[in-house]
Length: 150
View 1: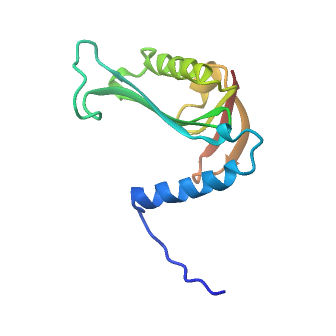
View 2: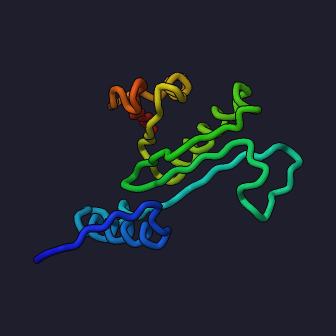
């Protein structure tokens, strides 16, 4: 059988959802407990006090975090704090909040990655440990994969 291959930069949300759904469907067939294969997407946001929750979820953000929950664990996708609010404990509070959510969702581990120019020390201070590393990625830097048992 022959196939034609094509590259798509910035694939549509629909294509991404289809690919993830297909992978998840096949993966669940191989799990002893298929419920572990269900993927839940989670966002935690912080806004300045006395700021009304806007209709547009992207407005007035001071910090935000994205995570995926699957296979009994939580994968941190990103944690961002507005530079104006960095160094005030907001990132730590965001991390504590998502760890609490992870425990409530039955997760026994939380993991993610960070780059040398980002937040390795921040995660280590919060009890995360390195379990993998990409040296010189991006060039001149490094990427570390970190985890914390819950």
